[in-house]
Picture (spheres, rainbow, N blue to C red):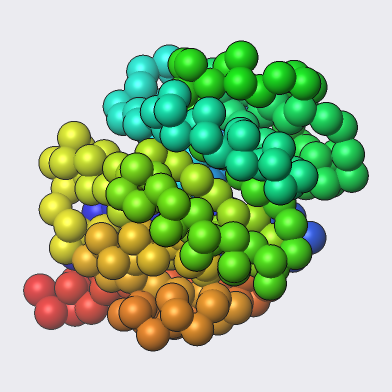
Length: 273
């Protein structure tokens, strides 16, 4: 029944310790062996997602930067890319300067920040990627960005999200991926659109897709999938829209979904046959 599974990383596939359980790895590998396309759908950089894909032996296009870039895990082929336009990028950089906010930008799979601080260091350590300090981010804006990221206190980011949405309207897709991450991408860069684009290229119908996530930026993912799954630790808004709520990221929720909707379905089909 299902031919494709798209899985978010942080707080979904990864535990709170940023690892993948052995049982979940085995379930994913069994699904791949059964002919299921298993991919990652994350807000992380391509290079970060690629490392995890390799650890799982996934040789498929990966959905990264919230859907701004879909690129082969073991190659250079880009299937989908949407960049923040230069004007919007310049305005966000100036806004961050004026408000004295920490802003990170991503271009050519490189993480840039205007200054080094604990927020940047912690982020780079968590996702295991290097970074480059560029005091004048405006120099880079002319070529557009895959993503721009504000890191701050959750309550403040809630207010900032509303403010930026009112300022930029349809020129940007603005969403929280974690309580302290506010992410800005091109308006056509979200996990749902990227998922459907990839599925179309692979000849897979929407009804044949399982999408699994935990946060606000996964709403498009689970709404675009035939079966939208929220983790047990997901935000309430996502759970309300999901077709199914699984166990938490620390309780092998992804493994449970694979076993329930891939292998139990196959067993039922065999028995019916």
